[in-house]
Every structure is written in structure tokens, then in C-alpha cells.
Image 1: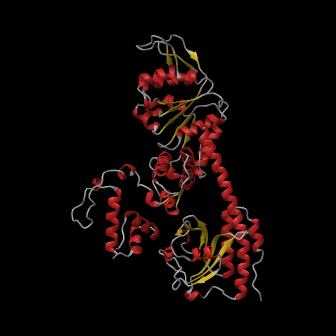
Image 2: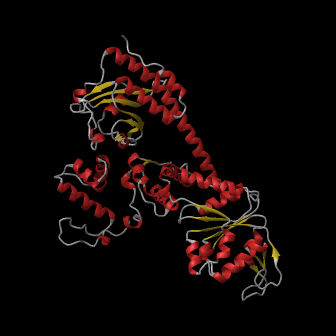
Image 3: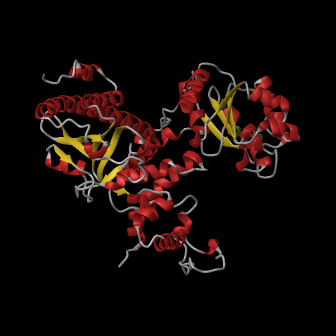
Length: 505
């Protein structure tokens, strides 16, 4: 009796979401062959990347990149455009590092190319047997012929979905890029924490009440303030910014409220303050938690009475402004410490907006990196650079204590220092390490020395070199074991050795 997969092609073409489609495609193939492990791979400029995997420990494989210059079954199938059957223990094409940390290894692999309607090969699908001797895979002629037909159908559906997803992503990226270059607020992210904050900001824009934005340094408080203004009825009026902690108290007072001629030495003419200049618009007071108590009472009057009195003046003037404030301080603690007025806090904090730190929205890191790489390359008028899979994985795990601002500065550094089109993991300086990378060289610490060296006296590369050499010596120059001890993939460890100029010879 001929094998069948009921409604398999129909089910694929009914699925519109790319991630669900690729998952359904792979699951159907595994169910047909009655095995539990499989993976989908896509051709990238620097190798072949896993975009979907099923089976035990499959989460470790998703995102894994097989280097283009290394032998691999998926690489062979993609480059030759032909199906193959391989025994991992005997086939030299098997890239065993992909399964280094797997408890159960592959015993037999059936791999088909993923081909577009025009004949271009864009990826591969592996159907994997882990049973002893590969006894579960059905390699009968009828099974393989039917399977090849359905892979051909599924690969067209998946290819179209991936192409559409890429096109959609490029369109969104272009819109954000144009917005960033023309002054529109470039708020980037899709994580739940970010979307919650953005939705609150959009709701606040419909009102005219004061907004108090809180969050760590670098989380984008001014960007959110600009977005609230842009979406409000005041959008055609000025948006003026004053960093409260940037200038002395006496000068800040004159900047905010203005002054009359003769109010103090050097005041040779009248000056309009920020609140008057922003008439009908928005005033953004950054680092409001650093404002002196004496000045806080004057800000309170603006909020209560909608009027200001310039320095040296005798009459008040009505003002029509919306105040958005921001701080990275805990204002409730400041109130308890007596450094911030409680009544001002309640006036400013009518609409509170807490922004998430980057560590609370790690799923946004790839999109943010892509945005900054594209935007700043366009500003510099240089070709855009891309991150390798290993480099992206490294940055997704980076702490980014300075949040989005730190990421933005890191991207600018990489654009300035990486000559090629692809940014590798070895090009990325450690956190707080950009200055150290360019410091004067010092002698490398001896890993075998009994006394503890002064680590602060050495550059990061020197310490990393000593660490790598110590690991290699301990594991008798077995790179796989050394990489495992370091807690990184073999390919990542190998890349760092090349960057450091370390080889057994």
C-alpha cells in the first residue's frame, strides 16, 4: 500500500505566519517518517543557519550557524541541490560540533534541499534518526519519492513565506530608517514590556495632563516624550528640552522663566524663558529628580496656576504648556530624604510611565541592532554591515548596563572599526572595554604563576589570550573540550583563537 500524508500540502498553504508554517512543515515530515528529531536550515552569507528544530535539546540548535568553510551535510545539500543520506559516525561531511552538547546523537540523517519555484536552493531540511543503526527511518523507494514531492511543495510555500517576511521586515526597517533620518521618533521594539510602555504613551498623548517618565539611563525617556508630543494635539507647536542637572541652579532658573533687563549683571536685555517660548507646546524636563528645592516651588506654581514670572519682573505671564518630566531616580526615596517636594511629585506624576530596561526586553535586541546598523551606515554614507550569527548571539547575552544608548554607541564603534561587511564575534569589545582595547600593551600574565596578577594592568585581549592558552594546555590542545570548559560553542572558541593568533603549531 502506497504511503500517504493526508491534507499535508493544503495545511501548509493555509498557514500564513512564517514561524508557524516552518514548525508545521517540519513536524509533518517527522510524523511521516515516525522520528522525533529534525531541523530546517537557511543559507546565509557566512554559513548555514538553523531556523527551526524539533526533538530533544532542539532549543540549543535554533540560531546555530555552521560556518561556510566547514564541511557539513546541510552545506553539501544546499550547494549541490541534491538529497543525501548520511551516517554521522562515518560521513566526513557531518559537522559534529552542532551536537556537541546533545545527550543523544544522530545515527542516520536524511537531508533534502529547499528549492524555490525558479530552481534556486535557499536551504535544507534534515530528518534525523537517533535509534541504534538508524533503524526508524523508512528508506523505501516509495517513501523517499513521496517525501521528495512533499518537500518540494513545502519548500515553495516556506520560501514564499520567508521572502514575504523579509520584504515586510525591510519595509518596516526602511520606514524606521527614514523616520530616524527625518526626525521622527525611532521607537523600535516588539516585546510585551516595550509594547505596554508604547501603548501607555499613545494613550497619554490624547490628554493634556503632566507625564512623569521613569527608567534607567539610556532607556529612551526623551524619545518617549517626543512620541507623546508628536501624537498629541500640540504636535505643531514647539517641543523644548531642558536637562535640569546640566546647568547651575541660578542659570537654570533664568533659562526656564526668562528675565528682565537689569535683573542681574550682564542682563542687558529681556529674555523669554523656556515656558513662554514653548507656548502651546510641550516642555520636557529631564533629570527632574536633580532639581534644587527652591526651584521646585516655582515649577509647582507653573503647574498650579499656568503662569510664570521672569527674574527681575513684577508681573506674571500666563503660559500654555504641557510638562513632561523624566528621571532615573526613585522620587519616593527622594521625598523621604527631603530632597524632593511631595506636592510637586503628585503634580508631575499624574500620568506615570515606567520604561523597561533592555535586559527586560532581550527579544528586541536583534531589531534594535539592525536599526542602528542601517541608520548609522546611511548617515555615514558607507555600505551597511551585518552581524554574524555568533556575533548576534553574543550581543543578545550582553548585559548592556547603559541600555539602548550603550548599544547605539557600540554600533557606531563597530561601524568605524570593522573593515568587512560582516561583524564577527571577535570584533566585539567586552562591556566597558572599548577604551581598554586601544590601551598601551602590557606583558601577558603567566597563567602558571602562583601569585595572583593585577588583572586591571592588562588589556582584555591579553587576558583572553592567557585564558585560552591555559584552557588548551589543561585539555591537551583538544579545542572541543576547551570550548566546552569555556562555556561557548566550538565555532565561537575557534574564531577567537584565530583572532588571537593562537594555533597548535
